[in-house]
Every structure is written in structure tokens, then in C-alpha cells.
Amino acid sequence: MEITGSKGPLVDKELVTKLSEDMIAEDFASTADYFEALGVGPPIINWSPQLDQLEEPALRTLLSYWNELPKGVRLPLSQKIDPLNMRAALGYVMLLEVLDDGMDYRYRLYGSIIAGHAGFDATGLLVSEIPISQMVPFFLACYQACLMRKEHLFTRHVPPMEVRVRSWDRLILPLENGDGAIDRLLVGNIPGSWRP
Image 1: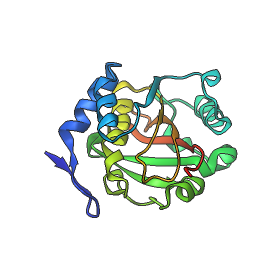
Image 2 (image 1 turned 90 degrees about the horizontal axis):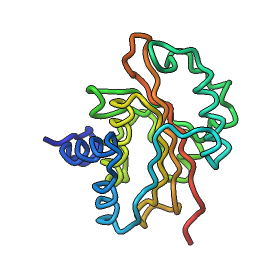
Image 3 (image 1 turned 45 degrees about the vertical axis):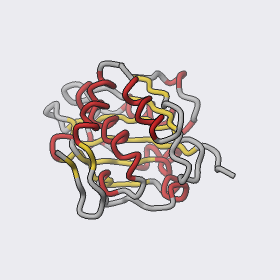
Image 4 (image 1 turned 60 degrees about the horizontal axis):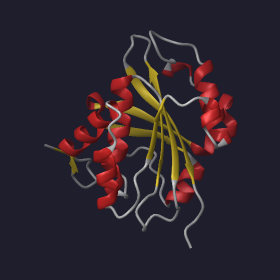
């Protein structure tokens, strides 16, 4: 079975599920193999990082903000998000809506700094529709794994050579609707330096 957005290429659902299940189990070999096939090194993946484990100030700001939000059954409430309270990180923020039980996600917000470095604005698009299709299985697997573990996740990955930056640091913070179901993901995404 494949996932497809109306504008994007097909995504291999079995691959996404395999990567996600392995991430949940903290077995990152299949992810390393996937990145090797793309011609880049394996990503760094860290479940539930603490503030002192994050190098980027904007990600620390976002994690502090998330930790201080009112909680639902287990996680911070999505309806309590206030962009004014995360101004220092706003250009690096993506807000994703969970769709199809976590098989895809819609970008409700795609930060201006992210868009400037990525070369496109994904606001309104599905993850399965974004132009860097070879990264979509990894992104979907990370988001799915957060949904299943109900935990936040940090990744640092090197994108394929056609992407203009050397790396991306990503902090994925799940949000719930008040009934215990995760309905949004608050994501900080920090670009590394430009490639020559």
C-alpha cells in the first residue's frame, strides 16, 4: 500500500511503518540503511531529550514552552498553543495536523526561516506532498513514532545533496486534544550551515 498526496509522489507505506516501528523500539539500523541508500550518513535520533541536551537556543525555547503548556490526559494541549509565547522560535516552527491515524500530516504552519532554507513553503501541504520526496518516509516515520510512543523526539539528519543546507535539527513535540489523542505536532526545525 502506498500513501499519496494529490500533488506528491507515492510514498511506500510499508517502508514508513518499518522505519517507525524500529524507531519506537530504538533500533535505528533500518533508518541508517535508508540514509546510506540516499548517499548520506545516518541521523542522530534521541527520544525525550532534556533542555541541556539541545544545542540550539530556539529548540530549547520550544521545549521549555511545550513543558509549560497545560496538560491533557498525558501531554500538553494543542488548543493552548499561543504563537506569541514562542516568538523567539517562531521562524523555526512547524505545526502539523495529524491525519488518517498518523499516516499523513498537514502543515498548518511552516516557519519562514525553514521555508527560506528549504526553498519552498509547505503551509497547507501534506507531508506526502513536499518536494523533497526522498525524505518523506523518514519524516512520516518520525511523526508516526512520536504518535505511538507519546513522547518527544530529537533528530539531526544530513539531507540529500540537492538540499541546500548541510543538516537539519528537528524537535518533534506531540500535542493532545484533551481526550488523550494526539491531534497536532509542534516541531522545531533548525537548518545547519549552507552547502558551498
